[in-house]
Amino acid sequence: MHLLRKFSRKVALGISGGVDSAVSGLLLKQKGFEVIGVFMRNWDQLEEQGYCKSNQDEEDAKWVCTKLDIPFKSVNYIKDYWNSVFSELIQQYINGCTPNPDILCNKHIKFGKFYDYAQNVLDCDYIATGHYANCSIDFMKQSSPENRAVHLLKAKDQRKDQTFFLCNISQNALSRTIFPLGNLTKRQVKKIAVESSLKRLADKKESVGICFVGTRSFKSFISEYIPPSPGCFIDIESGKVVGKHNGRHNFTIGQRCNLQGTEKPYYVVQKLKDSQDMHVAMGRDHRALFSNYFETELAHWISDVPRQLVEPVSGVFECEFRFQHTHPLRKCTVMRTNSKLIVNSLDEVSSLAPGQYAVFYLGDRCLGGAVISDTGPSNYILQSNKIE
Image (cartoon, rainbow, N blue to C red; front, side, top):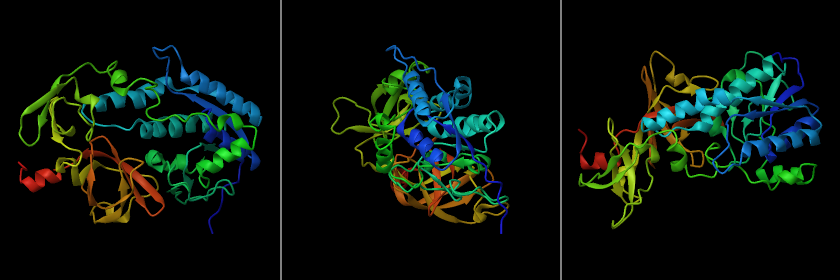
């Protein structure tokens, strides 16, 4: 029998001003926790329209804390976000990759800086967030056992499950994190808000996309940080130039090119190394968009390394993966070398891009994630015998 830590009750709640974190606070209060609401300001978001959304979110967060009768604190992580998340994001775009800022933000800010602040400044026993996810230990009922790994599990609401974005958090942080919404659906969360003092947040518009882009197009936003780098669209079949562009950072694999005067729409299928040129193919179902094989950097495993991948000899590990959080899970096999993972998907996948995260699952467990470094030859290249 594992010994349990003394079941303490003090928790720092990351509060965003939205319905999810607000209801999380309400549920924690109802369970008898001593809750402190903490608003994280990560981006100096005064756009050219002159409206700063984060200011309104902070006011809403204060309102929630007043309604719940809990202390409110605001912390400024703008510099940390710039150094740990945004600078990395820009460099990855310059390199022709497709990064995921939400995964980086969770790792470095919400489950990094905020976790440290809660532990070392507020002297809290736990942190809590409004993510739709679960832990293998229900911290709402008991504390975590000593010397036992805590696993990250899928949420009850599979459509809202956010474990994909949590694939890089540390075991230390996870073992001190409460997800109050893990066993609720979004509909249930809104119902709780409507039936409580938090009704006004039930219909608040949810934030989608990259938080710091605001109402502008991504292309307009990114042009403020990356100068134009002209290149050509090259038809992958004919080798002919079919159009030009102002920088590959404006495109990702599988994105439509909007070229004029073509029989069918063209889509980006490959960004050429050491060049701004990109291969494109006609049609959304072109074989150049599909592959079964890719490589990643070494993975971050949340609780433990799968035994088949433990050094010094690598076996074959069977699991599931996704590289976009809305995509269905796909079965795959994983092998490890000294510096990378080799992943083979049992089904072909479309529009894999370097820089994206492959997140691995085994049943309900989110095991961790790894950055895709090479997508390997497409099925068009393999079928055409065009591998150099």
